[in-house]
Image (cartoon, rainbow over all chains, first blue to last red):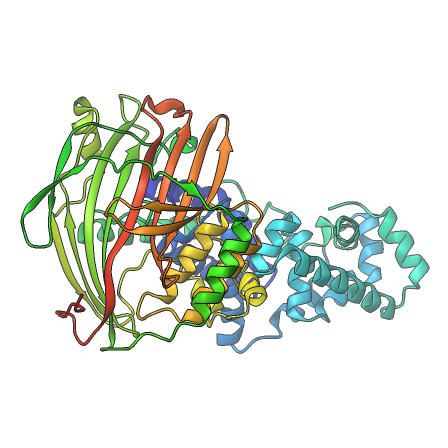
Length: 182
Length: 365
């Protein structure tokens, strides 16, 4: 990968340090059962294209993973799986903290599932995927400015969808501001 | 944007993450059996690659392992000469490392100069096509460095001359004549060889099937092409690809090499690329004479880190606006490598190019 990872040893170190974040990235986007296959494809692609990597490896790997996830959904004919996955999760029996119960009732995840794939990606990249905005823009293949606009609109659409889930704008604003930072 | 990010993170807290909390199998710091299995499969494929091709460096051709990432852009100047296989088969002596280009700044503002050049280039007719293959003959030299050897750092200077014939479908032929490697520190020759800093064959002559021609340019350009001849749109397209070093001059050069891999670059695109460079505030423009005696325009950006300045220049033919070469040079502090600066770390120069009918043909000069 570029200079530092031009040998196997460096690639292996990157693999070991990034496999779990990449797997979790994929679990947010494809069916749970498909995520490990997709992760294998991500790293096989990364090895082939290692000369293209610049900067930090994780955002670059996420960029590959985003394409792999889209291909996985397309090839399996299950483009709606992410929505289903998110809805399954929100309806799950997991034990959550009281605060999370509140957020669950807000329908944040349900609302997220209703958005376009690009909006979902923009929102997930800066929240659960844990990226800074510059890296998130890189993953999306956009300039920082274009990404900022998209994130803003996606956030507004998410809030609108959440409001449609039954929460008033005031309640939403209050909960969002008081909620726990990710 | 910061406010948006903070708000999104509150709306989607970690506890709601559909990937779950990192405690299930495969999530722990230790890799799952499946992950280990996939890694082992990749290792097998990597070993096979090494057996097939002793070493294939990226464009910059600096192999760096271990602790000296920041010193990768180091260079050396060694007196003496290196036997160089000329195109006619005779040996010609060249300096071990080409000297740093002597840049003479243009007398007008760089932006004005580049815009004027772009205006002239845009009016040029397209090149006459003589066949389906783009032929290029290029001369180059790079310093290969390994940082994890017992002596601290091992260097090997490897010059080469490359002829390539590439068709639009990505098939073609490449013939590389490697010059004799030079070891600035002869005591490190064994370390340099052990670190695989030296290519295995003196002459490599390989034919490639469709899509197989090895190109150093980023394949990410494929997702962005076709390229706009409107400077603003082209600048946006350039911003979609993450180029080596992040310097605009590198991005523009990489894009032009990608487009020109299998055919001439349209004058309108060459002009647009010059316009994009003209918009950058941190480029300087100079005239200079290359190592092989060509009069060229150099567009340069510099980065300084802890007293060490990396200077990157891309070279244009002043008549056509074609990219004809590049130089990476180190100025100031050489950092940990105990070598003399200023010095070039990598240079390349196009000696001839044109379209031809087959993989044996060469354009008439």
